[in-house]
Image (cartoon, rainbow, N blue to C red; front, side, top):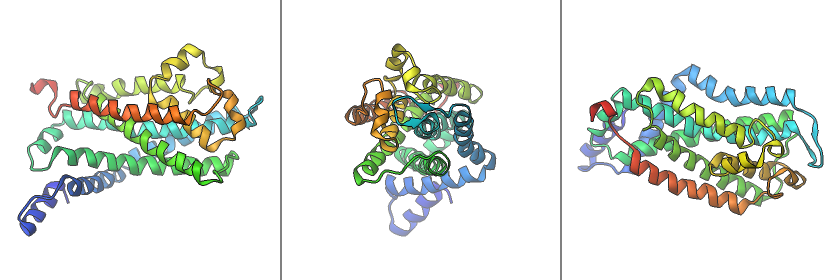
Length: 281
């Protein structure tokens, strides 16, 4: 059932249109159903970071001197952070650009559905797929690479706000960058390239202690580096802090930067989002 049908039935029953929150929930359920109907997309989305984790862990598995962890364990939180950004920034940046090019956004804008309901639906999709992918990677990390689950509630609380802020900030960035591609055909190139570069300079594919400081400083301007650092702080022992650029997990700075990107991403969305492509004026 589409969100328009939900709105019509609710209006017939109550005499008024449902709110954006109600329609957003319905839209989110629809987005999730559509996502899982595309089996190739489901397989690629959830297997991509797992396959890369297996590859890098097989190639780099030695102990990292002085950190109390091996390279395989370092890759687990890194791939979790990459998976979070993949299901939010990359997924939304491409899918919304395709929907705009195919005139889906233009048709939705002409319905009684509040614009906020469309974005709420996308956020629900991202929260669901991001949490599921994180759970899969966490299972692989604990089952095969000796990553230990936190034993105290404070670390689980840290994991919760890092996950929520990371998904929210990266989702808003994905919505914002969806307005950059000129067509659906160019969407993948426009979105994947910056994401790929960020993975190299943010400590996803390369150990954080081997990346030049100037690259880390550039990566520190974006959320992926802080996602990686925050998740390392949750799932790795404190002895691994010596690998960080500042020698500590810096949870306060992680929260500040991710929250700033949530605000900044929202501002970018408000300033740049378009319901029509450039050819329609």
